[in-house]
Image (cartoon, rainbow, N blue to C red; front, side, top):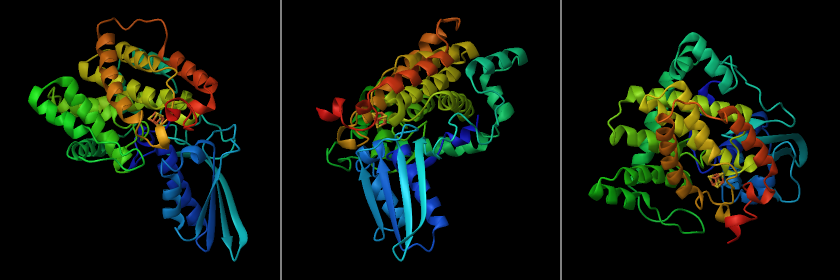
Length: 391
Ligand code: SF4
């Protein structure tokens, strides 16, 4: 598996697959066609159906040039390889000079047609699943935190990640008004925070922190993918609450961030973190699983308890659909972040009350999540053509 630096990306919302990935692809295409005087970008599948709400067209035009870029929304064709396809074309004097089909496969990552999905670019980790990692840790008598430290030189980068996560929360906590887009949805983080100042309630603080990031993401502001933009409010809220409500120090939070990253990496490698591919179970489910692992580290849980907590969190998000209203990363996404942060803490507390033994392994629940995602009707996979999006 790759370094967890590849999982935690610092960038602008509202969507890692629909904004960050297409922006990266457009930048690459521009770099190789600096002389082009006209571009087109054809969006397929989920990118076409929810691209407007997710600002895909806006970010591509902004990157390639507003006046010289045409966006084509193709709702009639979906590639089997992955539903998030983009086809770029570059022209000079109306003559086609370059063409590139690329897929935005989740978490801001790009792949080309039929490129093998579960392959690492850097392979910094010698293992690709939790079973092998736990066995290695047992043989070596090390914790999961020590495992990450042994193979991935990531601590300095994670300091930047943590600091960005917290400044995003603080920025969101202080804002009021409505979010951009057709729904005119009212920001709630500040209201929740004001309630917290009166009642000092733990859940109130946690929800406020989670809403703050999710609302910043919906406003196309700076977030950290954890593992995606749409689910970027879950893990930071758990860490922020641990620091400011429970007085946990930054060293412990960095340890927690490491293990959460490892968990996200395993899901990304063996399953998917793309809502267009497997529904929201791949986004909020993965984020919840990562945050459960993180909170388990904070509780001082064993490797087996951490694995169990992550498994519970993913298992109890199985089948979660992605049907954002009006294609915006707002309903159900924002509330879903808040509720998932609470579920993550519950999963960690639950697992910590056991010896870590349980029936379904984390690796198996990832397989089930992927199979379930493949079986989900397309209308429940980030197309806004069914479910909540039609109510
Ligand atoms: S419903 Fe979930 S997967 Fe879909 S856009 Fe919202 S957060 Fe992302």
